[in-house]
Image 1 (cartoon, helix red, strand yellow):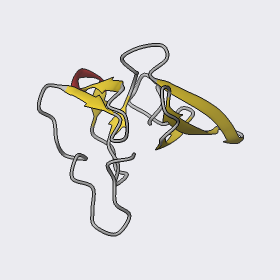
Image 2 (image 1 turned 90 degrees about the horizontal axis):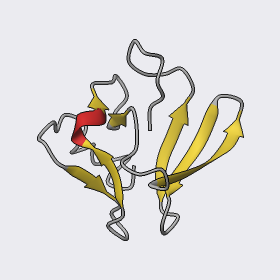
Image 3 (image 1 turned 90 degrees about the vertical axis):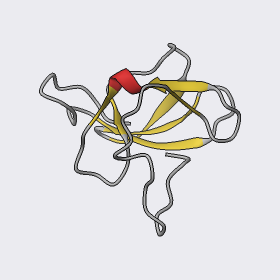
Length: 92
């Protein structure tokens, strides 16, 4: 996610207060805290976006998609198919 630091630790991974996650670059609405779930990765994980155009995705390899802000193209992380809660949803 754009609010992650590979070396400084992820500050929003264990953050579960109600609210809206926005792009760090343009403040476009991305995810609701209601779609956030606990995950073993060091990054926050969500089951769905706020709006249909909140993010854009392109396949980097089978089952792995690069996720970007739907407004400005800022890199947000990756989505992995069938990696999510028991419903088989994806992680961003």
